[in-house]
Amino acid sequence: MTNKCNGCGENIATQDFMNCNKCHAHYDILCLNIPKATFTSYTVGFKRDWLCPECQCAAPKSDNTPVRGATTAAKLSKPLTDNSNINVTRGGHKPTKAKAATNKSDSDTSGSVVMTNTKVATNKSDSDISSVVEEIRLLRQEILDMKSIFSKKLEEYEKVIATQSTEILDLKAAVSILQENARNTEQRAQKNEIEIIGVPETENEGLQHLAILVSKKMGVDLSESDIDTVFRAGPRRSTLSSNLPATINYPRPLVVKLVRYAKRNEIIKASKIRKNLNSEGIAQGPVAKMYVNERLTKENRLLFREARTRAHNYNFRFCWTRDGSIYIKKADGRPAIHIKSQEDLDQHIGAAPITG
Image (cartoon, rainbow, N blue to C red; front, side):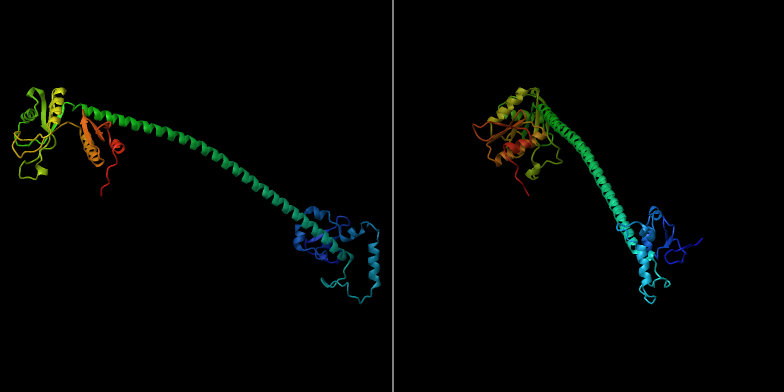
């Protein structure tokens, strides 16, 4: 069944109309001057409770003014030629009371819709802000929890590193002690040995005989029974010739291992008295100056060489060895300093000069 508009009297062909909750009259939105967008935004409840302009006007006013009668009288008092009330919008139909009252109704309705939409938008914005604030709070709490976890882990790692650093220092100290013990053990193994430097080297030489001759030249009685072994230190050269340069033909040291430590000390003491000991009458070849020293390990020998060089550079008067230990002294009356390592040289003498 087609509904007829109570405002313009025409049939309503669409669903865009309002139905009065009181008189049940139908009005299309064009006669009510309601925009399509506004009509679409109306809720079902709003449409159900809607009152037409006539029913709204019929409601009692504060001054009880008969609006309907006044409006009718005004209309009848005007001539028919007056076109001020002609509806030119749709088919030239004459506007009705509903049309006249629509403006106020639409204004009230639009205002209500705007206020409703604004309130909804405000509530939605407040809800969104609250949601964002809650997310930020949760994120902040998560960051604080992670920070706490990382701080605990960092403390654990620092403790582990501190423990490992202490262990490393202890291990280094233990290694240093072991190395020093090994050096001392190696040096003690050579405590009965002496080293004679400058004895001419020839083919088929008798090393024990040379050792006895050198000792006798220093005034020490040495027999074969006092000697454990004698050998030349270092690799054997392929040729021995006096025609070779001195740096190449320089003889290898003669190492004598004695049976008794006392005999070794006797020879060392005698060598310090006879400063100008040479190879004359000892072996064939050019006469060369000879030196008798206690036997040092390779490491101590290099350390002793460096100690003598630095002692000379820094004006230390004395640098010597005793029982495999290295000592330096600045001057007479000053205490002797025991040198055990390169660090001792840096500390007690001075840094090595930079070359290059």
